[in-house]
Image: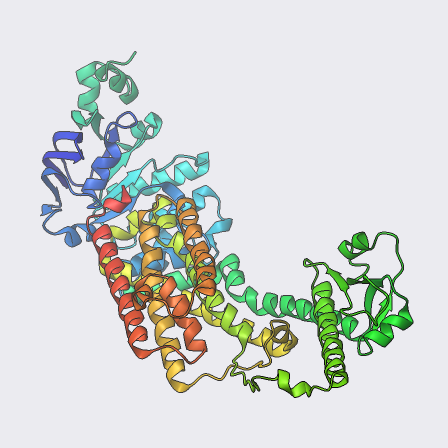
Length: 240
Length: 378
């Protein structure tokens, strides 16, 4: 569960998030949609404890992000910046192990969890190979594995399938769907409406730092009398 | 957590061929360069000892009588100055008046200041002319019934206390500049590169403590600066040991470095504190830079500083104001030079040591403040 109450963020005098409030129920796959510069990344960064809001409060699984940031971090898996967020001259196992250790896992449980997640994501063939020889799809899987290694209840993803081929997109989407089966909340920032339509059952639309819609995908469609999320987004944003 | 960060950073360096090459390359490059220069120096010396090529307006027999101790060959040419520039001859020795009974005998010597062979030849000719001049004066005084010893007002006995001049001249510059570049090679990526690729954001959204992150990375840069300086100094010492003629080229008769125990203590502590200071500065640059490229360009300015400051130290008198030792880089280079001469005063040493510790503390504090609020990620 993610909850934002009257959150505002200013960079100097520039207010980029204006008094935002919304609540994402547990176990949902949520799309965060908005134009470039609308405040999506700032919102993601605030939820993931990277930056603090200027005012307002953020709760992750009922825990205040500002007061107990370490407790929140245990519950968050973060994927920002795609496959670049790996150490290129490390193997997939070394990459995942490093993040497992930083999440406070001991040596044995880290190794055990890596074997499990490698089986789960079908990475056994290349888990001990260096990631610099991987395709983007394989790398994205390693990023996902290292974000999921500590079993977070919330997964924050920025453009998870950008630059991937068709097969890799299907793989990544299956992993995201399986997260829902494990009752994890997934917040995806994306411009890909096909992906949103397929995966997300909850939509948040942000425009110039203000939330203009936050509810079920079906509610968005009926509110705008649209057949698709893309059409609904265009109508609600005043786009033709 | 700090240990995990350190292990990861070292693994990154070990797997990066470029980083490894930049650290260990001096072990091969230095002896090669010095061997080449040494060989050239020896060849020049042999050439001069065997035969000096000169042009003169007198014949060979006349010149051999006049300068009996100079091994020379006369070269005949139309344009001797052109030959001198082209190093086909090393000097021109022309007599204005061929009647040597007329005093004083006027000799014009022309040499090429851009050629080492010509400079060496000129000094040999001057020594010879000085000897001949002494003989003529003595003979004239005796002919006039005067004891030549009346011209000796002072009897001078000089003694030179010398350490390895070349080492003292170059080692402080090499140690400091290679130490800085060794640290710069790894620190550009350590914060700035990881920030650029989004790795730092992912690292921060874990249980890792910010201080563990900072000190872990700082420890790696610190180790790399020391490793780099040690390897380069060893390579340098090895090169001089292999080619002692290099030291002689710089006018040094000593090829060894006789450091006292106290100087070793000063050397190690000054280098360690300088490494700590420079590591904290490099980390500051890396934190403040947007990406690895920007960090590298800022660091390249820092790596140029030792060369510029070394020039200042070379031309500065050793009686510099003691407060100059608190000036970053200048103090370390000037201090190291005096340490190699076993002449660094303890009060100045303490001033330098404390200033480096204070500067390291100051930059570490700045680094802590910079990463505290994650503002450096924006």
